Length: 131
Image: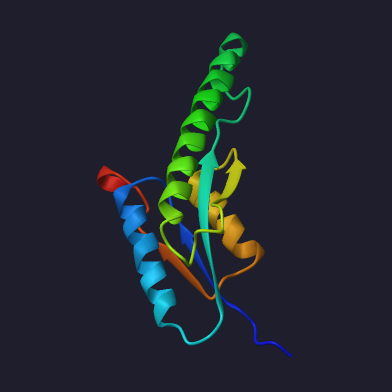
């Protein structure tokens, strides 16, 4: 019987802090003496359709979502390029999770579906008083 993999999940975007979190997770993996799997997860939070008070403005939500999705594709591409530099991650593409929820809740849902042994976060990306 083979031993189970130690699963580490890094929640990341294309920010320098997230790349530091990825670096940290990779350094941690290099010290493990057991088999492991390192996953990098990118969350895309879209605007729910038709949530504006005025029906004629719902097209703005769709247009904003197109822009959000385009930005996400670029960020994921940058992350995949970054991950290609490391033996631990070069053959594993970024896992993209998309929902109309806040990115924090998207990551939480992903983690709760199949809890990892360790979660690495660079930052919660909150500003001002939310910190």
